[in-house]
Each structure stands twice: as structure tokens, then as C-alpha cells.
Amino acid sequence: MKTKREIGWAEMKILFHDTFYESDYADDCASVPGRLEAIMAVIGSESTFEILRHQPASEDAVRLAHTQTYVDAVKSNGPLFDMAMLAAGAAIAAADVAMTGEPAFACLRPPGHHAYRGFGWGYCVFSNMAIALLQLKQQGKIGSAFVLDFDAHTGDGTKDVLSDWKECLILNPYAGDSEAYIKEIHNFIKSIPAVDIVGVCAGFDSYHKDVGRKLTTFDFYRMGVLMKQFAQRAAHHRRFAILEGGYYLPDLGKNVLAFCQGFQ
Ligand SMILES: [Zn+2]
Image (tube, rainbow, N blue to C red):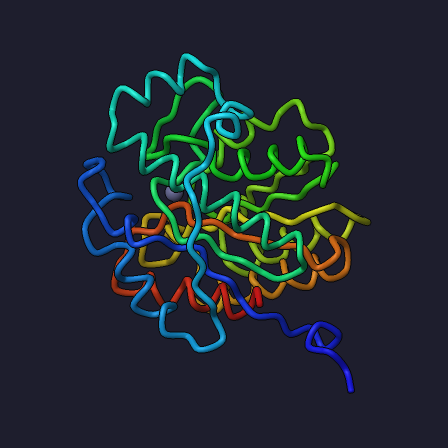
């Protein structure tokens, strides 16, 4: 009999903490009340998903991606700092799960892909993806990575923080319609023979009813499948995703679910 892993099935781990429901740490589109509730109401009851708790990131981990001056500046706003440390911790925990070959999705806020080494903008505070990858790299567990960022907006902060790491490949697809968008991802990854881990900056504002006005729910599923298959072929099954944007609340939960179902 084949194992679950041999048939390509793996249980999805969801990194989440009830603290993420608090919405008064900031006043922006990512911190609006009801946003994470919209996601957890759908994926939280999925029987094949397991919800895991995590710890906040350490300051040492955050300093792998950010300057001390910036970390200290964020720290002057206690509620924002605490939430951002918890978000970075969720990304780190998701990456740790991925190293075991199980898929993971971190349902977190504030998002991180607009956070540069020395500042953050666009609702982002710390570069959650970069912190998670740099911690694994520092621990000697990975030497290379691939990051897909399908948010409607370019992950300029992730690019900034990871710019010195030549073995980390980052794709922000830009194609204007959904077929070309999926094809762009397919064409990019087919030329990559191997990487040590696959990370996805999952921004659901690229949805056709959200600000990006482009992708469908089925496209999020297809990208999940693409990243799963790529990780199985080229990255020892190692894959994790973290939440970035996504502001059309009526469909946000089903879009996250579609991605996760493809990814697992
Ligand atoms: Zn965005």
C-alpha cells in the first residue's frame, strides 16, 4: 500500500492565533474588523486542515531582515510591534512545518511584502516571508528558495530584503489576464531544476472583484496545485504560504480555501 505522501496527499497545517482577530493594532485595509474572521470561518472548519498555534518571532530573527533602527522605531508602537512579531512568528512556524514535507498556510496580519530592510509601507511592518526564509538559511537548513508572490501588488519589500541572496528566486507575475498569468508562472518554474523550499506570498487582492481585478477563485486553486507539484518535483515537497493582501471580504474565505485545497 502506498503512503499518503507517495500518492501526493498531505495534511494542511494552518498557522493561526486568536490574537490576529484584534483589529485595533492599526487603522488600514489589512487590519479591518472581520477580515480574518472571513477566512477562518471557511478554512477553520475544513476537516483535512489542522490548526496550529505558534510563538511570536524573536528579535534576533526579525533582525535578519531589518535594521535595528527600524525594529526600534516599530517598537515605539507597542500594539503594532506585538502583532507584527506574532505575524513573523506565524511565517517562521509555517516554514518549519514545510521543512518536514507537510504544506502550511500562515493566516496572519499585518502582511509583510512591502516591508523593506529599513521601513515598511502598504500596511506591512516586517517582511514575514524574508524573515522565515533567512532564519532557515541562517540555521543551515536551506541554501536556495523560490518565492511566488501573487498579490496584486509587487512584493517590493521582499525583493529588497532578499536582494543579496542570489540563490533565492522571486516571481511577481505581471500578465494581464488569468490564462497568461498562470502560464507565466508555469514557464518560470519549469526552468528551475531544484530549490530547497517554495514560499508563496499569497495576496488575494488579485481577485477579479478585488483591487487587482484579474484572477478567479479557480485560479487560486490552480496556483496552489502548481506550487504543490513544483515543490514535489523540485523542493523535497517543502512548501508554505503566508497571507498578504485580500480585501474583498465576501469571497476571501473561499479564495483562501481554494488555494489551500490545491496546495495540499
Ligand atoms: Zn496587495
